[in-house]
Length: 193
Ligand SMILES: [Fe+2]
Ligand SMILES: [Fe+2]
Image 1 (cartoon, rainbow, N blue to C red):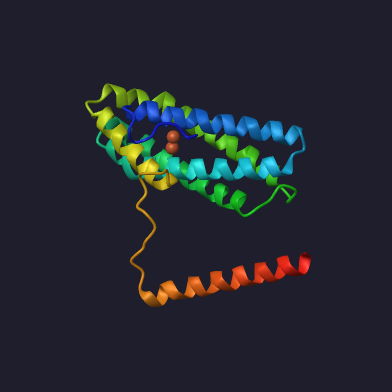
Image 2: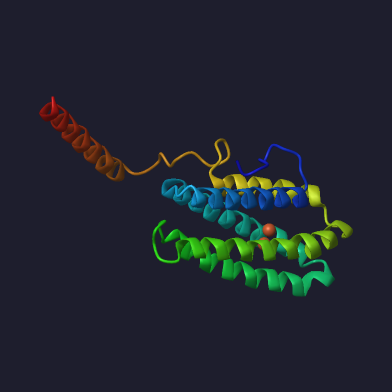
């Protein structure tokens, strides 16, 4: 859902803008779910919003912002953006710990959307144009962003397979517990028949 994968050719700016659009749509859908009084949908959307923003902030901090620091004019703006990320992450953590119906849940999602709008406006209005004017290779950076994003989002084919080299001791425990679960399910089924 969140945009471009490692295999697609894209530049860094296009990838980040696509992320911005995707999360804006999620916020719109959250507003619709609020009007429909759909708690389940609000919870699912808030969770998607938080995950999307977390991955997006991380790829910017790990790859995009450090690359932009090489543009002398952008130093102060990247500092401000990094501070804004911190505020966003604080609010994301609060939303992640809440459920629809909790006090201030909707208000926090709303304020999160407003912070994101403000932050996106600065990135797209001030940072991205400077990046485009610079001699930074935005295609190469875009490939790195896409690869890291896929890794963080756990998209198939990119994440390493689950560890299978666990020691025999650690393997035995989950098997025993899954046998116990199966047995208890069987018992439950029998008693329900
Ligand atoms: Fe950002
Ligand atoms: Fe961004």
